[in-house]
Image (cartoon, rainbow, N blue to C red; front, side, top):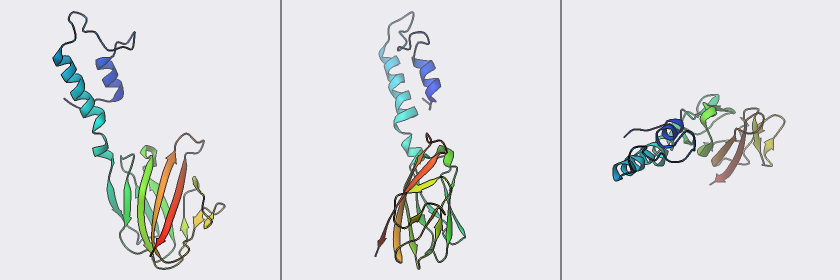
Length: 165
């Protein structure tokens, strides 16, 4: 079988008028029909996480650290090198994103991280006017971010943990 989009799946298996599972019009629903249904469910929905759960190295040496979600709803990142200066965090292809479960990075000083304007954070080290965060100490940190597409501006809610020394 093959992957079906939600609308293709519903067209194939649901009666357009009643919304119920098709009855096979001229014959009963047989074991082959059920086998095809189970296979389509498996191929189209149950294993989709194989395609969007991903861990990727991100370049932390440039002025901007771009967390590129690519086509994934969930993607974790780890820094390529120790952060040695102020950085801007950018979320690329964020329209498909829901969660950055983990972005692990290390800092060698108290560098300022600037976030997009649609970012919110509940952290004493967060400057909500400037949209900047400064670590409390050198060491390793972990950032988690969740995207809320239903908010009027589409908001990233960010938490940063650490330092882990």
